[in-house]
Length: 172
Image (cartoon, rainbow, N blue to C red; front, side, top):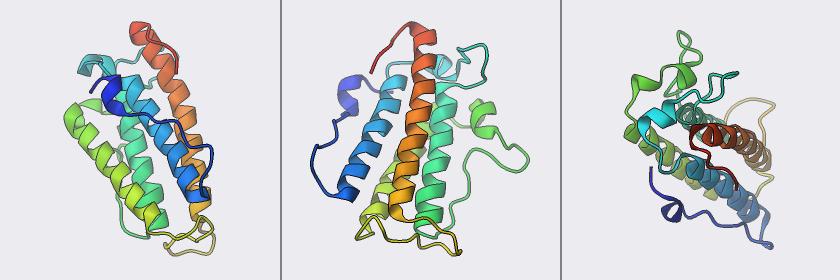
């Protein structure tokens, strides 16, 4: 993973349109996750550093890759997006089978999922637009963006604790 300066975390604007601001807050949280993983080697990214949980930083990246794909590609855009790291046979695969894909590939998949999510959001004219997937109870764009901000905020708290247990790095 690259250093902090290359991650480019930018504070969200204080003014702007709804889609713009929600997207900026989500990007802020995406960059925060990357900062929590920055400058760690493969062993550190895979380390189960907090004894009461099986979470790892790499597992969080894998999980959020599948979450990005599920909400933006499958739900909002209505296209197939099968999970990349878990299955019916391995329901916790994103957290448990950390050696199934090289770390560099995990990051490539993560960035591809984020870029595709941004493209999907940009294809909607407004936050109140409903998802394109079939179903009577589909969320709108606003709901998905707010849900993803919540998802990242929760997991960034986990990432902060993991990172601090790995090498003492804390903050932000």
